Length: 97
Image 1 (cartoon, rainbow, N blue to C red):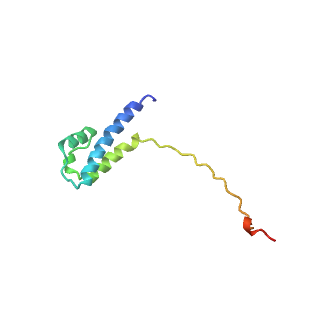
Image 2: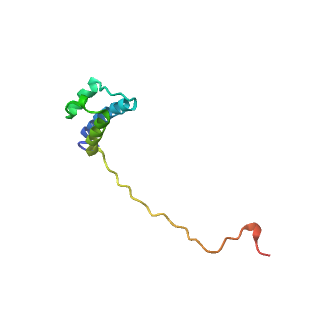
Image 3: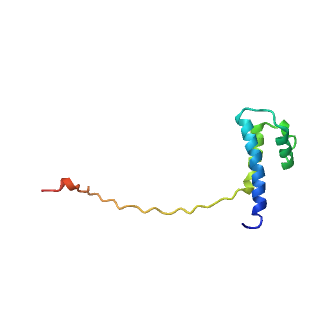
């Protein structure tokens, strides 16, 4: 692990846990924010989380997660192309006589 990875992982994990709680509340159509989730949001810098709708809280936490995420660039390999001939292949049972 590189230096700073532990801090990055713990920050991402904390945000992920809060995001999971908010998504579960949203999934079950809950509108009341539990105090422990509200306290966690205040610790993240979101003021008066009880006054903000849960879908908007999800968006804010998701935006806070973005700097922690790593973008992996995937190298695309060229696929080999088969050579296509215009002649139709001769099947074994259709040999010319």
